[in-house]
Amino acid sequence: MAVKNIMIVGVGGQGSLLASKLLGQLFLSQGYDVKVSEVHGMSQRGGSVVTYVRFGDKVASPVIDEGEADFIVSFELMEAARWLPCLKADGRIVTNTQRIDPMPVITGTAEYPENLVEKLCAAGAQVDALPCLELAEQAGSAKAVNIVLLGRLSRYFDLPEEAWMRAMEAIVPAKFLEMNKKAFLLGKEAAV
Image 1 (cartoon, helix red, strand yellow):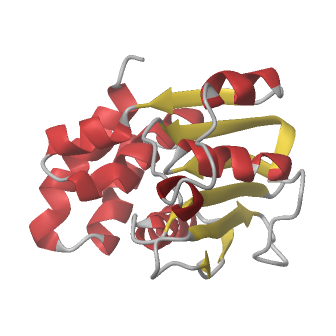
Image 2 (image 1 turned 45 degrees about the horizontal axis):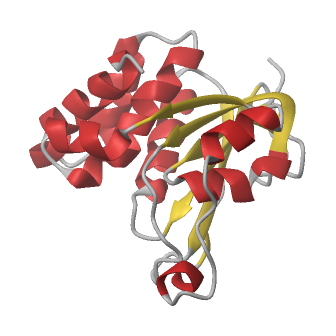
């Protein structure tokens, strides 16, 4: 199988590291060679962060270059726009519609861009946008946005749901497992 590339982008503290570990576990369990990058960015200060997950028959490097991402999984709309140049021409963005204002917007020195989903589509991206925070809260915790996003991402892979659940069981602490499974299913099944 040719190498597939997934970028996970967001703001520090949103759970991108857990999401990348879960994907790594999933693809390893399916017999793929997998490379998962570390978190890059200001992950502990609410800044922009990115992790890379690459899988296939043989993966040489964990890094995804411009124009190579099959998927961008975004915790926040402006992060999806920031990393758009990394998306392949036929790539897909799976994004939370939540808006998290960066410091320049908070301080009033910049404005948050309007109509980002429409702008991403106009730039040629296939966009699957859903209210992940709302779905995570419905599952039991606002912190489950990452798992809602992975549930949505699972729609684009020909892997059994049980494989995703087993990966979750291997990575997510037991006391949060049922809530995360619910968040995964809500993301996967959401009609938007």
